[in-house]
Image 1: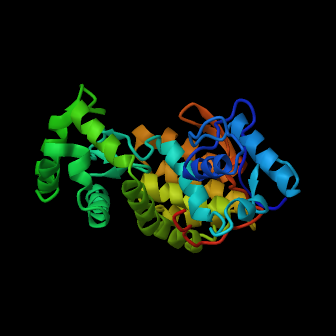
Image 2: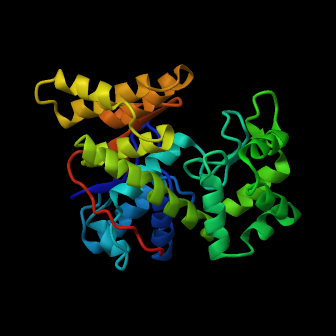
Length: 319
């Protein structure tokens, strides 16, 4: 068995989840190997189905999705890339999924989608425009009469957008959206066009930043790339260059893991105090391979993110 892309997590660790698992469950079910539901979560049913499929092909029945099993299961689709694996883990940290939208709790106006595309950052408008370009009536179908209001506000100055976002955000913390808007974004996020647009934008915007930072700091193995991607999504990019270079200079030939740890700590220290511990927990989990994020224990090897092998960097065609 070579590289693992996803596997059942040990007891007490967060299960692997996301699009890759969903597609695997769907394909196994099509081949007659029941995963006991198609929910995008790698549990015992998916492990058992993969094991049975592997046995049927004469492969070692590890129950893990690996680089021997993949071409037998998906003969016309290239293997998962470092981007695909990083996206699965970071989107789990973010906790949004394709459908969830939240209000102006953090000054971002409105946040929606798999890695949290924001109104104030302009990414929400970019993704919505991409969806409408692909399927022109998508917003009308999802939001009904509110679609025109949404299109209109995206063309207003930022101050007007924030005022609008506050008007549809609920409670003193403004975390939740008004139900009609939350449901509209949920319906939109459930569509194939929206999911494809979100993935494509995550790659075009944040993976590009991650690749640049990874090359700059010699973090080109899968854990380094995943760390840089998570930094791009949560922090924008690595902005602590002088501090990182100073810390690296104090080390004698630091290992890849030590380089990741230094960068993780400096990025955390460069974050707003309110979010430093959240940033540190996420970044150190990726730097070391283990950690606790938002109360869940993670082993990044379950998600295919290890130092052993780097994947290709092609985009997986739509199945």
